[in-house]
Image 1: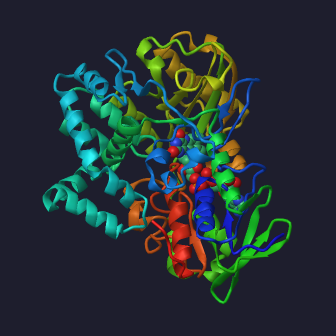
Image 2 (image 1 turned 45 degrees about the horizontal axis):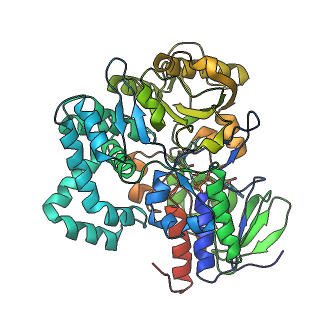
Image 3 (image 1 turned 90 degrees about the horizontal axis):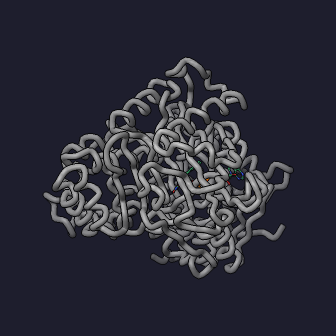
Length: 524
Ligand SMILES: Cc1cc2nc3c(=O)[nH]c(=O)nc-3n(C[C@H](O)[C@H](O)[C@H](O)COP(=O)(O)OP(=O)(O)OC[C@H]3O[C@@H](n4cnc5c(N)ncnc54)[C@H](O)[C@@H]3O)c2cc1C
């Protein structure tokens, strides 16, 4: 194997962004990936029937098009084509109108006015605030905490009083933010539905801010999908890396980080090969795996081990993929135009489902994040058909089932029963959905982890997104930056600030920290 300056462990989006940044600064870099294919949770395949391309994990990428860490790579020059559905997001309600997010501001506003006159203007005001802060805000989001320079620009743009009000708003729970800004139910539903992409409840602090950011990015840039499948995003990252001399070696799990005199000297692969990393290592692995398995407790201070003991994973996940004979027959035809659909008919429904999760109960009526492609990318399915997916959360540690039927063992039988429960929720809003299904694929917590060791028991975000494990507390208090207690080793996965989602920020931050310690000039 040709020796490299730096090693990246894991070819997820963060690992590949890190490798690209290192290669851009003149380092030779090799990425070791445990699986047969690169991409981590950004992969796609014809996993059901010929002609149906399924995104196996993540599926739509607002953060990727908004994040400076990925935008800087100009992946469009490496073959990536973004596609957008006519509507960004639809959130149908049981009896009332459907809340809609569109890149056309008038359309979003009209949708919210249908819930209560004046709610359209309330969204326009929230979106105007976003436009004022978006650029420094995304810079602050994508740099290690505290984001000194971007934070100062944000403060200067708003002034101290407005900055304080923004900070308060960002910390609001989604339900409260909805109540403060809207009279009808639509605005709160858009905020809360987006907050629930992470393991937040409508009542969690930070949920309002998280929901507002996702809605605002959706309003500004849509929730785009790569033409042809999620795997095309990974291919663009790999192609760009290779064009700069870097390489990705698949089916090569790293078993150990070789630590010499407190410094990461190299790695040992599962087949016993040892590879030196003279300039440093970026780990795109979960924090517990990095510290406890790859480094080893003997090299770590007590305070880190104590922090890791309290590390909290986010909820577990069950994901379904469908090959459909025809597009979903939504009762409200407007839903057909949306790429992403939130299925959870009211704020109280969202609260019930997420409160059950907080109690360790399998939700009786789960909240689904649902995706369909016919309106965005007709290359995903045969003509006249569609490819669709949905995921929902189940507890990390199951205490019981709110319906008393399942145990959380998630064997084939339990997955099938729960898949029926998920499909029931779709049938309520789209009677006849089941008749459209030509094939179905189920991935539960065990399948997800087997396909990617970072998805521990189905956790999709590298650790909870709740406030107590964010910012300076991510992954553990005192380790809030990419640097680790081992010199030359940097954490660059979703376990690091700012957490889950395909934005590349943890990978970019880790690579930049490595470059700075090597006294290499880091470009912006
Ligand atoms: C079902 C699902 C749906 C999601 N939906 C979305 C979405 O629509 N939009 C969005 O923005 N985000 C979504 N996410 C979240 C997003 O995919 C993740 O936050 C993101 O992929 C994290 O990137 P990463 O590089 O940190 O880790 P990962 O993508 O998990 O990649 C880690 C890689 O490291 C490899 N690895 C681990 N250990 C080792 C080792 N010891 N040696 C070698 N290789 C190793 C793994 O095999 C894997 O390839 C979703 C995630 C899941 C699972």
